[in-house]
Length: 307
View 1 (spheres, rainbow, N blue to C red):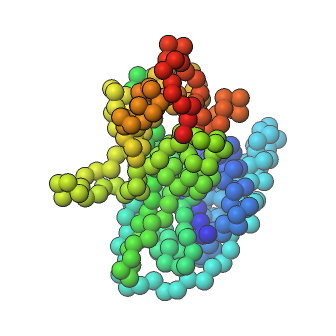
View 2 (cartoon, rainbow, N blue to C red):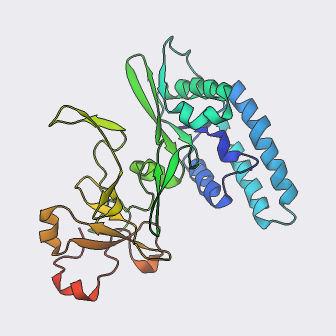
View 3 (tube, rainbow, N blue to C red):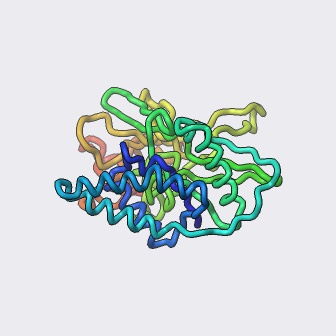
């Protein structure tokens, strides 16, 4: 796998926090994901971003214990850069998503990354972009009372050349590689294989990676919206019409409020709402996808645990 490093991941003025950078670098190292050494890209990335960031961390290491670990992560990141052979680019290439991500860095960076990502995506290897969420750039905050939801507005780059379109996933966490739909949806949604047997997992819509699709009923193009309003609350919508909502109570939560919209599911469970353990919750909260808790007044109505 080939990875392009978004320069703003290592922005010297506002770098990705160590707690987010370290798991990414570890995952990339363990899976032998390579970052290409291309003369213009690599030279500018090192000169304008990596070297100044390393100098700032070096200056801070005497007072900040995280700075030493950050320098180690940058050193490991440096080992991922490798020269890769690229064929000449076709005469005509169409791209989407690049300006939204890179225009604030300047048109020269946009052009450079269009060429580099296009060259990588046209090889036989899968290509990804290692990036970070920045509000107003590739994500937006959706607020509803005490609820805060982050919607990812740029989840892939697209390159069309020689009659085919290649999607380059925008990866912010290792979770985005293990559960690809989380490049657009919340990382904490449980998926099949997270560890719970017979879990109630989030099943993404079949066209989740597209911004729009043509309706089979009307023939009109309709927007694909990962977040919709259901029962007066913003929810992540799964393939079955179920809504996965953040609990509307203060404090940290370890579960999702899941509204069941399928009559069959309501009949199977005896309830119209389940409380399902989030991915990333502490082990004592239960496996991701398991039932987290059940209000006392509903316990007699539950017909089955999960699945």
